[in-house]
View 1 (cartoon, rainbow, N blue to C red):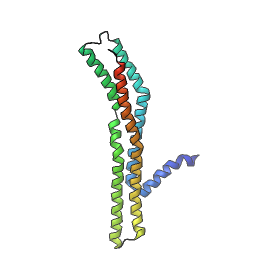
View 2 (view 1 turned 45 degrees about the vertical axis):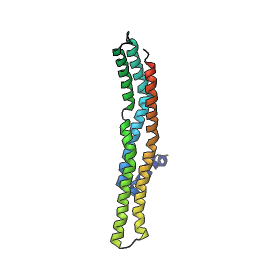
View 3 (view 1 turned 120 degrees about the vertical axis):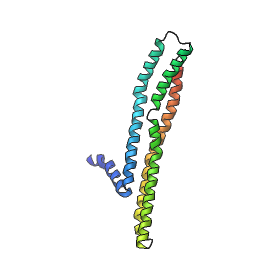
View 4 (view 1 turned 30 degrees about the vertical axis):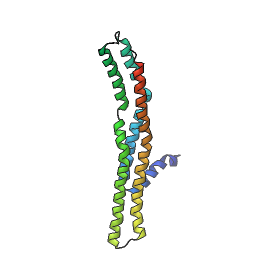
Length: 174
């Protein structure tokens, strides 16, 4: 059981040894990204229904709903809910492309190590080159894997925001 629980830690530790320091930064970025994604899931499942109920109660408590001022209040209520749905999403949108860029930096560092070893030895020894190329590819793979894992949630949240905003606008009847 303990081996099963430690397997992810050992996998990340192995990647960090094989890929270098940038794998740790990619991993931290991935943890932050997924923490924000889980926060958004929590918001849509639990917080948004409560906020919607409160906003609808404010709207239903109004006796007059046809004036220009009432329309502006309605717009404000829908806008507040929409902006609440969009909170933290820009940060996730930044982290998704940041991870492959960090992987690319790791790739460049790994290739520089290959070229340095070639310059020091004066020849292109396959064994010497393999370590640097391996480091480069591990960084690239880690960055891409973390990034790809965050792409679908970003798309899903953007679709949900559009859909829920339209539904909210329909629920606030004049």
